[in-house]
Length: 123
Image (tube, rainbow, N blue to C red):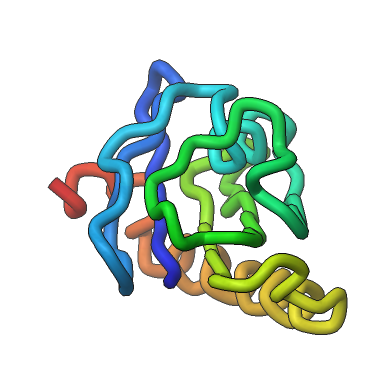
């Protein structure tokens, strides 16, 4: 399961394109794994989401998670959220690969001018 959460000017994150079960539509700034990633402006690998303080259980079957901020002009514009059904289900090598892919996505969207308008196109 994977999806993009786009940031609002107040810091809230809103679900954009995703694959998987219905997910949380809005995540407050600094809450859950996605909100924490956005507020810290750094990727997170969470081997056991149930051990993460403040975890938001959007999908009760999710066991591990990797999240990556998409940056533009030193601002988090979106967060890529990848969930796994197994505890420790995302290896460090996969995490690094996803991080590389996230950078490519951010670069492509920025070149197209779509990253800042992601929220409005996700509505």
